Length: 170
Image 1 (cartoon, one colour):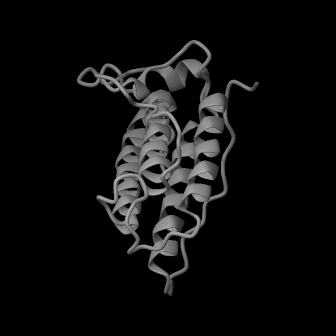
Image 2 (image 1 turned 135 degrees about the horizontal axis):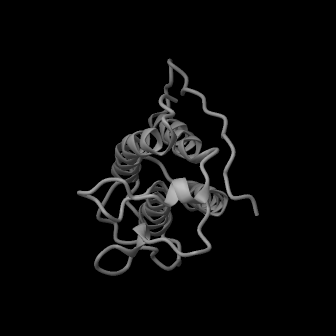
């Protein structure tokens, strides 16, 4: 398996979108591609670096592993009711931790596999539907939450990528 990941196509959602849930999912897909593209071309060492003194567990790979856990929990398990193990059970949250086998390519592959699980789990649900696990949230709330969390962490990846090799933007 390659040590680096490659870029993912990214496109803005339609400007005249009429379907609320589709719009949220389209923005999520845009952000997912942004996240993947922040790892593209980084070596394992660059992607595993933790250059922020105030956040010693925060690496680019760790951010993407955490977002994989976020999608698993919120989209597949909570919203979709899938019977899957959580990827972040424990304190402190282990989804940020790296293993020696984690590379940009393997972490991106796991993240993309989670997108497919989420798509299947959300199939047939509308924005007003209650989540299948606990019925404590609307699907709208869960998807909006994952969009904001992904956007927040994409910002962290902006900083980590610039510190890794100076690349900025898109």
